[in-house]
Image (cartoon, rainbow, N blue to C red):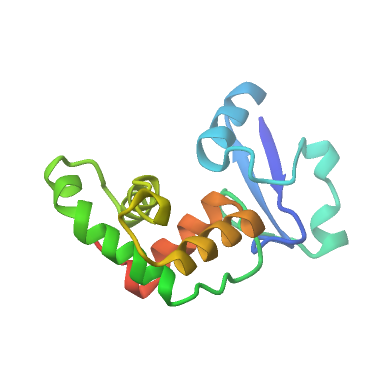
Length: 156
């Protein structure tokens, strides 16, 4: 059994498709769920997908979650504030083996509530306001990924 996965127009993977092959449709969806979750546009059977490569000029790529096509502009004070939090909690996180990659480190720093100036740990209210605005505009997961990729937020 094969399923053909397509990706949305507003995403980096637009104009591409992925092939998932397994014993049956349920096994195909298990693979899709494990690799891409719900981050793809459509899943087609071989019959339904026939002709789409030629019609739309699609290219085959490995199965992956789709990523939005935009870049987030991170204000300089936000990575600085996250670095300040890392200085406070980083040794404990590393000693406890709680973070296995840089994205988890940034997530832990954000989850520590130390960016919020009302908690008394951080005096950079502008960084907190910028963080909240980015989350509102792009979503929390996208902001975490963008921050984890920022040169000032590379901790491990």
